[in-house]
Image 1 (cartoon, rainbow, N blue to C red):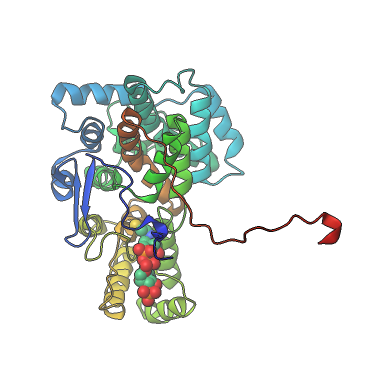
Image 2 (cartoon, rainbow, N blue to C red; image 1 turned 120 degrees about the vertical axis):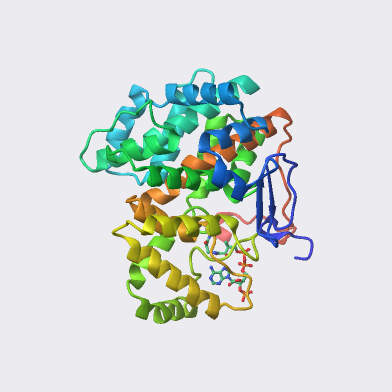
Length: 376
Ligand SMILES: CC(C)(COP(=O)(O)OP(=O)(O)OC[C@H]1O[C@@H](n2cnc3c(N)ncnc32)[C@H](O)[C@@H]1OP(=O)(O)O)[C@@H](O)C(=O)NCCC(=O)NCCS
C-alpha cells in the first residue's frame, strides 16, 4: 500500500492558472484574486470571464459576455419536451446530466474541440443549465416554465425563473455571491472527473455530464442537501447532542463538516455564514440558520483537536433554505456555479492535452488455470 496515493491525495495531476488553495491558511484564490475580495466586489459574470480568460474583463468585454449568456438562455424544443417527459421519473441532478448530454447530441459542432468553439459551448452550458433546472422545478410543481428576463443577471434570473418573482436586492446579491463561492475549486472530484473524460478528447458536453454525475455524491456536492436533512431532522437545539452522538456511534459523518484540503477554515463557509446573518434578519426560516449555528458550536466542542470545520456546504444549506430554495436543488445549484470552473479547466486541458491514465497496483492471483464451467 505504501506507494499508493489512496484517493489521489497530495498528487498533482496537472498545472493550472485558475485556482490556488492553501488549506492550512484557509486561502482560496481564483487566478490571483482572493475569494474574500471577489465575494465583496465582483459578480458571477465577472468571475466567469476571469476563469475563462485569466484576467478581469473591461466594461465592453463584460457587456459582451452578458449578452452572449442571455442569448443562450432559452431551451431548444427538444430539451423542453424532454423535461416535460422526464420530470416525474428523474431527480434534478440526473435531469441535468441527461439534459447536458442531449444538448451535446443536438449540437452539430459538439466534437469541434477548437478554443473558440469550446468557449461557445461553455457559454451555452452555463446559460442553459440554469434554465433546465428552473424549468424542471416549475414543471414538477405543475407550472409552466418562466421565460428568462434580459434585464436580470445570471444569478437573479435563475431565482426569477424558479419562482416567477423578482428577488429583492439582498437575495440577488447573496445568491450571486454563493455562485461566486462555488465557481471554482482547483482539482476537486468533479473537476477531475470532467478532465478525465476531456483527456480522451471526448467532447465538452460529455465531460460536463461526467462532472455532474460526480458532483452528485454525498461526499462532494451532495453534502449540502445532506446538511439540510441533518438540521431538519434535529429540529430543536435540545436534540443536537443525541443526534450527533448516535450518528457518530453508527460510524457516520456529520455532513458539511471536514474537507480534504481545508484543515483550519473554509473561507467560503466564513463568507456564507456572514451572509446568512444578513438574510436571517428578514427570513421566516431563520430558525434553520440559528440551529445550524448551534450545531456548528456543538461540533466545535465535540471535535476539538481534530481538523474538522464547517465547509461550504454547511452554510449554503441554510442560506438557500432562507432564500426559499427547495433542498433537492442545492446540489444542482452547485453545478450551475461550478460549470464555470469545470469549463475553465477543460479549456486549459484541451489546449494542452495529455490522456489521464494512471496505474493500479495489482494484488490479485497469478498463473491460474482456466477450468471448464462443469469442473468449478
Ligand atoms: C470531505 C471529506 C470526504 C474529506 O475527508 P478526507 O480528507 O478523506 O478525511 P478522512 O476521511 O481521512 O478523515 C479524517 C478523520 O476525520 C474524521 N472525519 C472527517 N470528516 C468527518 C465528518 N464530517 N464528521 C465526523 N468525522 C469526520 C474521519 O472519520 C477521520 O477520523 P479518524 O482519523 O479518527 O479515522 C470528509 O470530511 C467528509 O466526509 N465530510 C462530510 C461530507 C462533506 O461535507 N463533503 C463536502 C466537502 S466540501
